[in-house]
Length: 574
Ligand code: HEM
Image 1: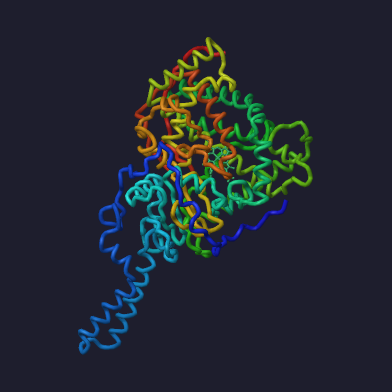
Image 2 (image 1 turned 120 degrees about the horizontal axis):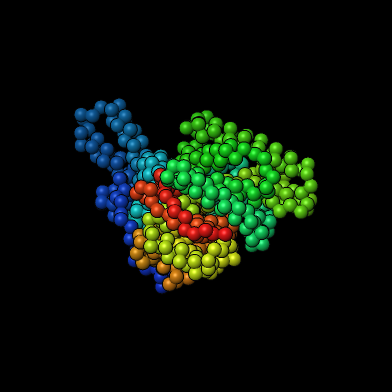
């Protein structure tokens, strides 16, 4: 396969002003929104809209206004101000007002050259000079962006700047659909860390072209097909047995269980079995460390993604990426080399399948390294993080836990092990997972953003090519005009109304939607459902101390503090 160059945004693409301006509003959406507690932006006086002074300043050309004042001042005091001082003041003032003129535009610095006649202007925070909104993008960026969008009355679409990068964000199902499902946003902006860690050659960051389509086709046929997921049930069961043993052991040893380590190990083993098969002889601790390091590097806001300081390496991100990529390359290349020496026919793991592809479909070794590494990287933490949130909710709500256990007992009868085939009958258990995906979506900003490859209209707004687009799924799933009592954990809501989480209903799309929707969603859900059912069937779970639901957003939304709990065996399960 040849690798296509990243497509260049077509900045001059003609736009038809009439497209996409009509909007169908489904009954569940109340267009008169703002519903989040609004957090005033530091640069605006009352959080609702720009202060009158700033609005006036924005409307008038600041540069002309300031110099006009200076000239008036000069003529008023003509005989007293010496020329050199006047010239100095004039240039300093001009420079200052020029900077203000660039900076004081809705959406901030990066939007300075994007006002197009006859189109409404996108609203958004001005942010800080040069930095834009980067200083607000911390570990709770999803909450901050939701409250800023609400305070600007820009829930449907808001503009902001990350350094010199133009960004739009949707906190509404309709505009989210336009972004995720339209053809305009089918690329992803590539971060330096993702590039250095080889993800540009894997599914997640490859530009949307023939190579990317080829990878998705291979993955959906050989890694994520329903038949393959079903074939791997044995692996999931034996890993569940192992996790249950570890939980019991930890409880016996120390009287309390820290679940995160158990889940991460289980999820890693699961994905390794699926990708490399069972006879894998690698140091799991090292792989675990590599995944953690990758998360740390990709989840970081790296100045170099927004400013070209080629010669600087703030925080050592580049150095650490080179080191990690070299280690990953070395380990995965070695595994591929070893596998080539043995007979791959008849093996069901993803690597053997890649090596057995027809000549014209085969990937180069370096592309294979990138694809396999991405599967391990994406497949481990997402599942572990989601299951940790689910268990935290089970412990926090013993009544809901008991109800799920009653459903299990009714479905399984006495002393039977739960299987994949039982999951379609466990509707309440499925509703619990949906409710956790709603309240704690592992990708509240859908993990990886999208990039406009040509000019496009979203809502009534014009969005130029090269703009980064985000969807604030967390804001949508916490919007009280869409969800009744959005802050209450109530799985029953999904028993009352069927809502798909697979990407067709943008009220709840934790796996994204459209052509770049998560390809691992069915595998992820199959794993989480089965392991949750096994955990609830085996033990009654209770808190060891107060459950802390604080969040920390890195690449995924994690529990800030690892969940600790106590367990008591329920019955002897065969
Ligand atoms: C609970 C589990 C998971 C969640 C919540 C999740 C969530 C997501 C989200 C939100 C996206 C971005 C979608 C978009 O832009 O529309 C994504 C993309 C992706 N996910 Fe997942 N994911 C999960 C499990 C997995 C698993 C198990 C794998 C693989 C083993 C995986 C592999 C990927 C890949 C390769 C992409 C990039 C797709 C592309 O750009 O074409 N995910 N995931």
